[in-house]
Image (tube, rainbow, N blue to C red):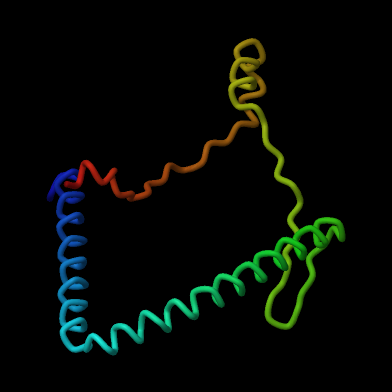
Length: 130
């Protein structure tokens, strides 16, 4: 069985292989596209970039308006394709303060629950990958 560090290195190699495939695919696509087609594609992308940006701004503004009104309304609202889900504010406690408090009041530890640990796989900084 490989050590975790070795498996992470293998994962990095698999990612590099996949990225290499993406580059090879794009290189073949670029060979097929004539300079005229590439120029036209760039024009289309530029034309739609502004339209997409404006549409995204409209969506974001309306979402913020819906969120504010739903917060004020105090309950979830359903539309035909979307819903605004209102959620009661989460209750939190000062963990450090309660730990200190538990030193003189250990009975409070009966109410403490600790969740299961979890693992997330993240890329290291790019300078480490070079």
